Length: 315
Image 1 (spheres, rainbow, N blue to C red):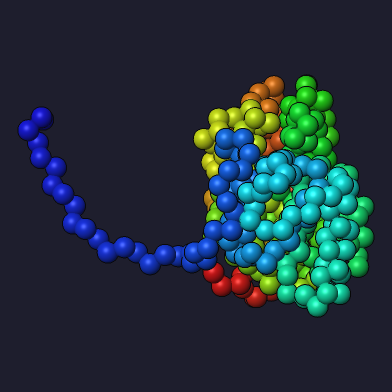
Image 2 (cartoon, rainbow, N blue to C red; image 1 turned 180 degrees about the horizontal axis):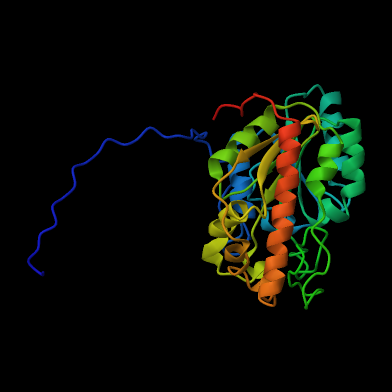
């Protein structure tokens, strides 16, 4: 066996890239995120697509710390730090101020965590959506108040451990997607860093769409989810494959479409990757599976009732 020679494979021509991304990096090295944090993956990708003429409005959240201490910034664009509950309304004010100065081309983005979106910022976000403010709202959802010590939020899933739900959260995750679709905003979509092409296509569409539009991005947090930092993308992918976090988009609140439908995997594969679900017994895991199946069936019904033939924006 030691003398066996393995023939060299013939070199193959490089395949054409499926996804063309801008060459310019807007986000800079030196951010302060934890190892394995998904937020910089989301933000770096988004800023490459959006470009330097972007203004980020960030309330109190992990990303307000990840940016770095004043006067330094890793984001490479203008950043407005605002109060916890005011991301959407501050973004609307920034957009109005730029327009008054004759600058109607700058992209204004409210970039907030689930605490500032599902809970504390829901009222101002709803008002901005009702007024159809010309801003893009991105919620990077790590499913708890991670920046202040892993406390439960409205986005924390049922059964999950946090420092304020040591025996597991008793309530289900708030249906923010349904809430925002009910506002009939021009564009809403869920994205996951585990399905990169889908995420980029939706980011591009959201950037190009006028009016109030929103992206709900799953953002795995290794410390808060009690998992190995190397499993961030795997968890983001499993969340979609187990249908815990389905990928879909809604136009004007009425046109629903599932954009990725991989062969479903048992929800236990997703739960077992994370220590925050370690207390769940077999009966509890089965209950979660039923709930996930029911929610996905409801989503499929929405999509069947509001289906159209319009495609995603080209990559």
